[in-house]
Structure formats: C-alpha cells, structure tokens
Length: 173
Image 1 (cartoon, one colour):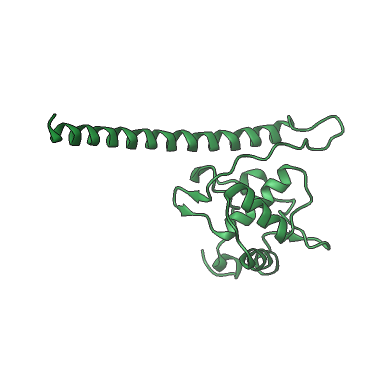
Image 2 (cartoon, rainbow, N blue to C red):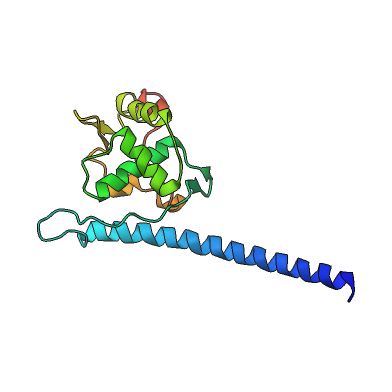
C-alpha cells in the first residue's frame, strides 16, 4: 500500500469532520433560537401560567456557551440574561450570588466580584435594573419583552434597548 493513499484518506476524513462540526454548530444555534422563541411564545400567550395565576416552574435549560456571533458576552449581558430568566420563572429577582450560580449552571463560568460591581453600576448609575431591600436585582417592570430581547443578534444576545451614555447625559443625537 502506498503512503500517499493514507495521506489522501486522512485529508478526506479531516474535511468530513470539519463539515460535520459546522453542521453541528448550525443546528445547535438553531436549537437555542427555538428555545427562546418557545419561551417568548409561551409567555406572551400565557401558556406557562397555571390555574392559580402563578408562573409554572420550568426545568432549567441546558448549559449554553456565553458566546454570541459577535464574540464573548459581556458581564452586563450575562446579568441581564440571569435577570430575564428570573422574570420568566416568576422570581422576584436575583442576588449577586444567585446570578453567579445561574452563570455557573448555564454557562459553566465562574465570575466573582465583577457581578457585584456591574450589577450595582447598572442599578445605581445607569438605572437599567432595580434593587429591592433584600439586595435582589430585577428588571424594571415597565420594560416590554420586545425591548429586552434583541432578536437580530441571535439567541444569546439578551440585552435591553438602552440609550447610549451620551443620550442619557443629554448629549448625542
């Protein structure tokens, strides 16, 4: 047997593996989009509500990478995602420790102090989220689901429609 035959076959197998990886990535992204679409549909149609009027507790979704098509999610985006999940589950909000637990469970990411700092800045300075007496952060009630979900960037981009810092300070266009 000629060594070139082995080299040629190895190249064919490598190319086939790459095609399969690309197909798997595309299907995984589609699954994430379908999960979000299903949650939004259920929330908007009230399908998740039981007869007592409380939101039904759903199973946690499988871990998803904290990566969007444009790169790694920011801590701010991850805080919004954790708070959106809390809202969808009917929870009053999440403490910084609960946000860290959510990120560990859903993204397999351990993030320490930046959660506290970012969430506090989002509440105190940017007024993007609320904080109650128990130290739980939550999304503002007046925000609509359309403002909180950015469908154009794919399933992992759960970011609110927040004006730029210039617009908040009275500058900008």
